[in-house]
Amino acid sequence: MPPTARHTRRHAVSTRLWHWLNVVCVVILFMSGLNISNAHPRLYWGQAGFTAREAWLHLPTFPGWATIPGYYSLSGARDWHLLMAWPFAFGLLAMWVAMLTNRHFVRDIATRLSDWRWSAIRADIVAHLRFDFDHGEGKYNFLQKLAYGVVLGILLPGMILTGLAISPGIEPSFGWFAQLVGGRQSARSVHFLFAWGIVLFAVVHIALVIASGPIRQLRDMVTGGRAL
Image (cartoon, rainbow, N blue to C red):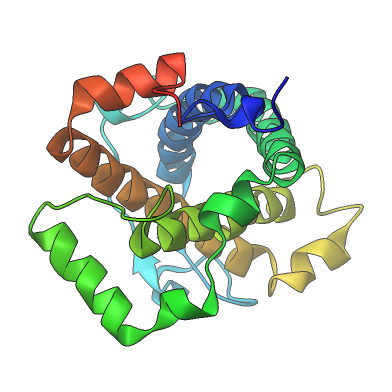
């Protein structure tokens, strides 16, 4: 078998499996998280309490169509949240193991010093504004590498860590862990910001998929795509 045989598809099996698992997990986690937010729709920093005047952000009450369950239920929402947290966390761990093993991260996502030249970044931005998605050399352009790197390396792991820090079952035994992120209230705020960061990425991602050919993109993420 040729040494490059396992790289003949645009998307590896591990990438495709994780992608669709992650879609399901993120959607359910986000919608159940909105239901949990409805129980106390205020965010704080540091050691602030629960009074309205101490909050840095007052959240709206999210409607039933946007939450899981579709009605207010803190216990039900927590059950859904915990159920999806396990495949979300272990799926991300498995994805990182696969990316490092098959060198997908190093080969396709990690940026080089030359990628950070302003002239190259500006050209990439202009190309996107013109809906020109030709990547040239390599699988992804700079903006894609940057976005995927932030999501895979910061937002998704950050959701897991801050989620542990605010878990009622973790804090009594591992209070020091919550303090690593500035306390439980700060962890809750960061958890919220990271969640909406993932949503923003998803919206832009879906918009670019639609702009660059949704049928082909979806087919590739199911079948693996054309041979490279």
